[in-house]
Image 1 (cartoon, one colour):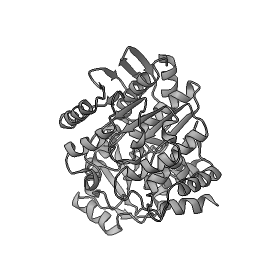
Image 2 (tube, one colour; image 1 turned 90 degrees about the horizontal axis):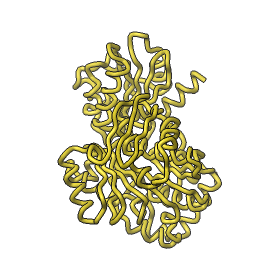
Image 3 (cartoon, one colour; image 1 turned 60 degrees about the vertical axis):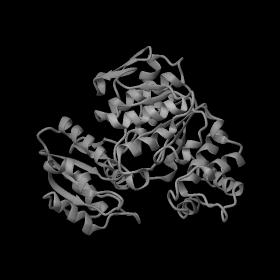
Image 4 (cartoon, helix red, strand yellow; image 1 turned 120 degrees about the vertical axis):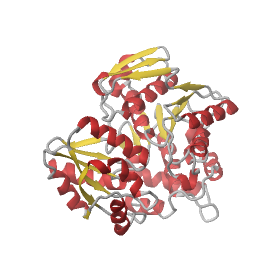
Amino acid sequence: MSVRSTIRRLHSRGRFGELGLERMERLMANLGQPQDAVPAIHVAGTNGKGSTAAMVEAVWRQAGFRTGLYTSPHLVDWRERIQVSGQRISPRLLAEHLATVERALGQEQDPLTEFEAWTAVAFMHFRHRQVHRAAIEVGLGGRLDATNVLHRPRAAAIVTIGLDHVQRLGGTLDAIAWEKAGVAKAGVPLVVGWLPPQALHVVQERAAQVGAPVILAGRDFTYSGHGAQWQFAGLGRRVRAALSLSGTYQAENAAVATALLVLADPDLGPDQIRSGLEVARWPGRMERVSERPQVWLDGAKNPLGTQALRRHLDQVAAGKGVRLVFGCLDERDPAALLAPLADRVEELMLVPIHDARALPSAQLVAAAQTLGLKGRLGTLGQAARFLLETPDSQVGVGTGSFYLVGPLRRLICGARS
């Protein structure tokens, strides 16, 4: 069976369905609990969880471990979601593992969602490849996410908490924090990043209820600097590194990743951690894809993300106007996404995403107009050329969704290779 037909079958199941762990728990039992066969860390958060997981995996790989990395969404190729030591799952093994999953659970009576199927395949693949360590990113929330069948990870983390997926997780920080705190487990260290006070209170309360020791940013560990001047201190470690990932918020993510690593693998030395942080890659997240002209791509998909993007642009392109390419899914508030960037935007191209869940063109235009922005509609190809023609007086930026940034990246990097 071809990988395309396999992915079409996965996609036909629906993305998330009703949140819950019953199906996944039954499936994992039928498959012999593959999720418990590999030492893992579990990373939740509104933003930053993928970057944090990628940094942990890079350190482990540099230290000589065979690693697994499970993340979502992908940028270009669905198989990016499941990697062993930096290599995507092969089409053959993807099809084979999915066939095993489908045999293990009667699909007509108990249909798996797309994300549940991907998660099951990831755990099976990591067991099959006998990986030494795995970094697992939560898909949505935490408490009822398919990845939360990890019964006893070596450590878990909540990187950030903000308003996102409010239809599913709740419309307040308290409600979202409660869902994300569901990754806390008895006796498993829970690394907690720099959270809003009300969210932190909920997380600490939930951790205390289940008996998860909290390792708190700013109290148990901290960092200073960013980029080449980054330093970590805490948990008996001091680490200096020239971070490979751009964006001031990556300094916080790197601190959370380092705390996870120290807790999961106490024998890792500062030089091993430094080495991994300096080679970690996470495309499409505050990524500079062109030097001249200066073009950045960032899959920011909520206001917390575009606020971080704005702070980054204020540092790396102070005094320059923004030439912006923007598109998003219909579940997002486009005006709220655009608002942090609006006063710096000089030229705007609005691009409907090639996805059934894309926000229609008319709504993109209307959202821009509410902020006083006049944007012209364009195709992906036109958007790539638009960014590559950015003048020196401007900085080019593409943002709003990974489903926009991924194809844009492919076009831009291909055009410049």
